Amino acid sequence: MTRPSLVLYLDVVSPFAYLAFHVVRTSPAFEQCDVRFVPVFLGGIMKACGNTPPANIKNKAEWVGKERLRWARGFNVPMANEMPSGFPRNTIQVQRALSAVELLHPENLTETFATLYHISFVERKDIHTLDLIGPIFSKIFGETQAKEILTKATSDEVKKHLTAKTEEALAEGSFGLPWFVATNAKGDKECYWGFDHLAQVVDHLGLERPQPSIVSGRGWRAML
Image (cartoon, rainbow, N blue to C red; front, side, top):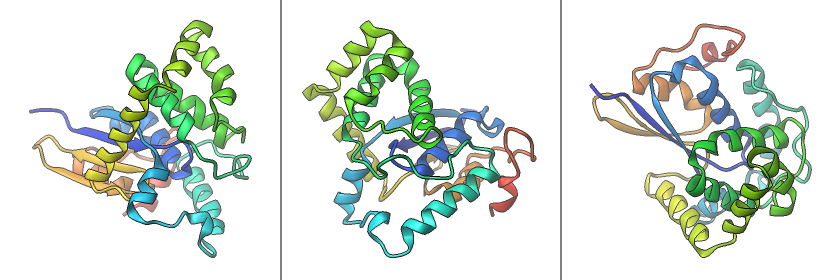
């Protein structure tokens, strides 16, 4: 029998995508699952679906600020009390850089996502331009590879790749992030939106929900 698989579409602008990424990456629930993280452009998804950004909806921005902290505390995910500087930023440049990592150094994509999410949502630093992430990439890859990646990020190949992956997410039904595409061991595929549906993702994949622990926290008990 094949292992269950999970594709998780991500943009570093979304605090709920960060929550999903962190839990999927660190929770023992997903150790028996093949996981792939895919950079996409949330702004493109929102535009294609005619969605209004949460910051532009009355009362929703305040709700987002509170809800992300509730889930972060429940799952022991590091998260600053305040939003990142200048939130929300246009992340097209950093998402292209992540796409370049996906193409050139896919083995480092998870580490790169983790580093950028931490700098944004824990340290509250701005990461939305290539100039800002240059020093970060140099620490991860070394100066030579970082320069290669950031140069690649401006290429037509990478721009088309990010567009294609964003369109792929849309074709899977995405209208926001995080977007999960979960295929269980029987080959049955289901899609889910939002961190608050993570338990449904686990159940569909046939995985076991973790018991409360230092790593997993007590958040699973709050999920249906």
